[in-house]
Image (cartoon, rainbow, N blue to C red):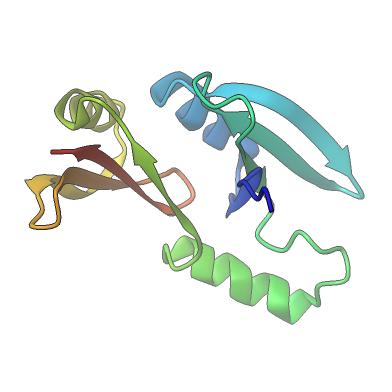
Length: 136
């Protein structure tokens, strides 16, 4: 059986801020931008992985989500308690400097971990935790 990752999803509350971060700061490509029923989905991905995409979606992407659930999801997103993504890089220190300089909230400065990686963590503009790791 041949199974590979194709999409993962990150909730965002402002697609334009998210695009500016993922495209302009991280260097990902914007591959799609679709609106439907008052909602918007934007796909981004690394030029090094043309078959893997991150979908930047509304916190309550289902049009049948109740108003109470929409509010609860918006509150969880604001607290940074929804999804996160781990990225790999060849130079975590250089990436850290670039992302910090862009004004992203630092969660963890580059640290050598006992399990063989050097990593750091930030929050994207919506509050999602993003980790960046470099194999030792």
